[in-house]
Image 1 (cartoon, rainbow, N blue to C red):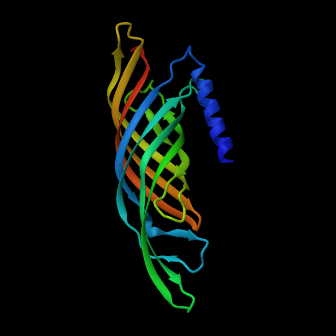
Image 2 (cartoon, rainbow, N blue to C red; image 1 turned 135 degrees about the vertical axis):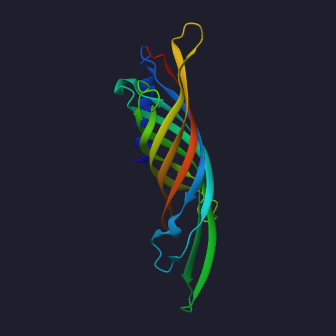
Image 3 (tube, rainbow, N blue to C red; image 1 turned 30 degrees about the vertical axis):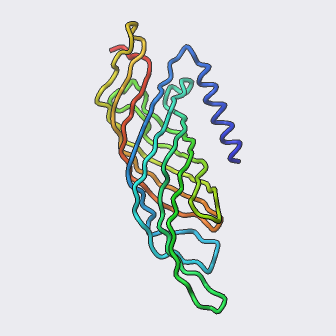
Length: 215
């Protein structure tokens, strides 16, 4: 299933790049914030393990997005890297003699993510940018028993561009926008023993390049 989704995204990006007569919007979005693991709540497949509490940790990353001109720039695709949402997981494990042992571990999972976003096009320059979407990809938790996991994310985003439609070059066919954004995300890290749910709040800068809009 994952390979099929990645193939469809790659095909859509390739199709978008073929639309040379229409200029897509290319955006770069570095971001930083905090991740919350919501008390380490976990959907467990191991009945002997019970998560007790969680933690709060900084996170940072960046996304590269491109809009799809054949969808009127309302849909975009992208790829991103991030430091990973951190989780402080405390749990109890049932021993062979029926006693319980309290354990604790920190899970940090840097990730490579593909994204599909709903987008406000550059025709509304002050608000242009992603307003929400989903991201999915591979995470690399720092735990010995599992070197790779899966990360799925849903997010909402608010944008404000304070520099808009500024010309590039003498021909003035292309322009750039610079702004900031606020993002709220819901994250799902899937490991062998179950799925950890978390959330994050981030702020960032958005720099985009698009076709010059006639004023």
